[in-house]
Image (cartoon, rainbow, N blue to C red; front, side, top):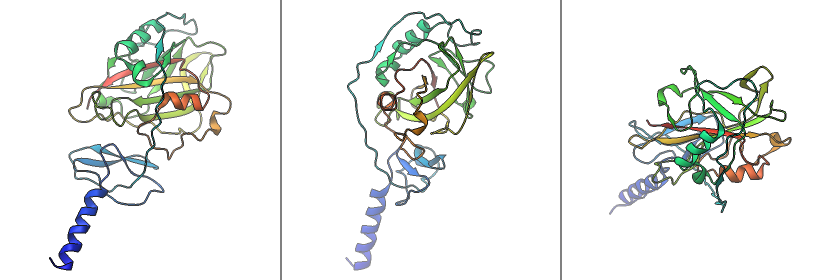
Length: 277
């Protein structure tokens, strides 16, 4: 075989090996390296600092390389099915009527177990997209085509003092599929500095999200994913944390470990929606 043929074979082999895996990181500010996703993958921009190989019909696009280190924990998930009074303001239209209903749904769909949560909420979290007239209940089906933009958050019943700041987390525990969640959880949104007011349930953000919201993108043909929203009381030093930054990989993200490392503790409220492509 000629030297030219050998060189061509070696080049082709290197290009195949360089392809980024499905749901792997493939771009973003500061990244360099090889530039392809595996067959069937499309490099999709999440934000200026992160792009991800996602299933798609288009030909693979450019990508880059990163290494993700996953740390597992032995947290034993616990839940308490109790109905906590939610006296402040008025109920959130469309949301669950009490915390017991939320906990029941989390248990029924194994959300608590999947995230390793201690989940005993003291308030009701409402999540409403602009195309919706009201929030959804935990476990409700929500069509992907209405989830493009950042949703509005509402909080009912939180006490002492109840005006924030709060931290919102959104994550998908079912990537690439619920039966094979090898890249999960995937972080879809992480933002602090959400504040309430004495006269409204709606929470208002102040500042820039650590991970800007990006739309649910379950794989074509996958069963519904359990897109989960968790709300935490924000500790005083949270804005100084560097456990997760805008350049931290969004895949294989241990939510419970992050909460422990940053002093968030356990979520005070949460909900989740079922969404398919």
